[in-house]
Every structure is written in structure tokens, then in C-alpha cells.
Amino acid sequence: MVEILQWTTLIVCALAAAFRIPSALHGRNRSLFLVFLLATAASVLSLEPFYLAIDGAVGGINIAHLLLRLIVFATIYLVALLVCKAFGAAGAQRLISGPAGLAVLGIFTAALVTVFVLMEPEASSVGLAGIADTSARNAALLPFYWAVARGYPVYVVVALLPALIRTVNSRLPALVRVGAGFMAGGAAATAAGFLLEFTGPGPGVLRSAVNNAAVVFFVLGLGLVWLARVRAIGSRKPGERRGTSCTDR
Image 1 (tube, rainbow, N blue to C red):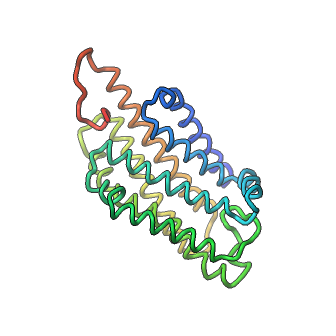
Image 2 (spheres, rainbow, N blue to C red):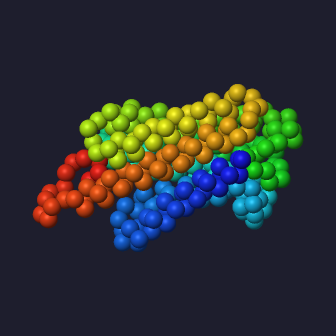
Image 3 (cartoon, helix red, strand yellow):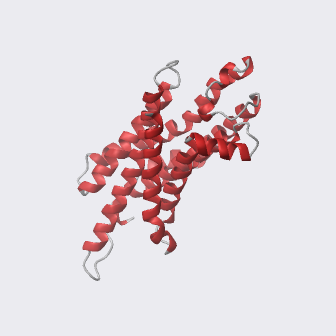
């Protein structure tokens, strides 16, 4: 069941990236293509066959997992920039990409790398399963690693959530509001995934469902907002000036 969820997430992200290739090649909204591409890369690293192969190529000591978490950081940061621009969320943008926001990103990134380096190297293990049982040091450090790995995405989605909720309740086109609703769901799933890390051993299917839902919801939400923009441009009369709604950004 867990693998089905992971493969479904990979397929959704890969299809979204593929649909954006023509526009990216023409220089249109390449940042959205990059988000989908990074989400696809993260999905690949979440699957055991790919994880073991990639991690084996870089030493077989779970460096691939550190790479996965850094990709997640980059993805959620770019998603936040797109959302802030689309929905005019100036306050959220300051919290995420302003001086304070960049400092938070730097602190979380440095902390993640530091905790990983402090842990004792172990053989490749998807999701770092069983790493805590290999040594007392790893058992002590692993909760901090997960707190940092999940903490930055939660910081970002908490900053974004007010803008997403405002958009859902606005009079913008239905596709935009539904897209914002999906992303609000992704934000909620991201926060839930963080909390599940501290509830002790639990059903792996539940954790996987929540974490993969967060990715899929964000990808679908961004896709719907992009589709709304395409429809808005297609329905604009020749010579009509661009508007100021999120679908024109």
C-alpha cells in the first residue's frame, strides 16, 4: 500500500512536469516547471529501488536521504514564492523570502546537515528506517533530524495558510479557489506529517498517506491555478490589457 501511494505521487508529479516542458522551453513560467521537476526528484528518492541505487552511488550511507530533505526544502520554498506572487501575499513573502525568511532557511539547512553529519554512518535505509536501533547516538539524534527536516516546510505552510484561506473565500475564478483549497489541504497535510513524527511508532500507511497527500495536493493546486491563468489569457479579447488577478501573474 505504501509503495502504491509513493508510485502514485511520482506519476502525478512526473505528468505535471511533462505538461510544463513545452512552456518551459519557450521561457514561460520556468519556476513552475522547476517545482514539478523537484517534486518528481523527491518522489524518486522516496522509492526504495531508486533510493538504494542512488545512495549506493554516493557512498551507501544515506546521503541520498539528506539530498531528499534538501530537495524538499527547495521545493517548498519555490512553491511559497509562486503562491505569494499569485495571491499577492506580501506578508507571507516577507516571512519566507525576506531577510528573516532567508535566515530561517539558512538555519534549518545548516541544522539539518549538522545533525546528519553527527549521526553515525549506516547502510542505506529508505526513510532511515531502523537507524535509531543501530546506536545510542543515532537514537538520540534522529528525533532532532526529523524535527528539522519537517520543521522548515511547516514554517513555510503556516506562513502561507492565511493567504490560501483568503483566496478560497474570495471571488476569484472557481479554478483558482479550488487550487488554493488543494494547497491549503497540502499545508494541513504537511503540518500533520510533522506531528506524526512525534507520536511514536504508528501505521506506516498513515504516515505515507499524509506525506504523499501533501505533495499531490500542492502539485494539483498549482496546476489548477496555472490552468486558470491559461483560460484567462485565452478568453482575453485582442488588445485587452492584463488584469491584476492571480491568474495574470
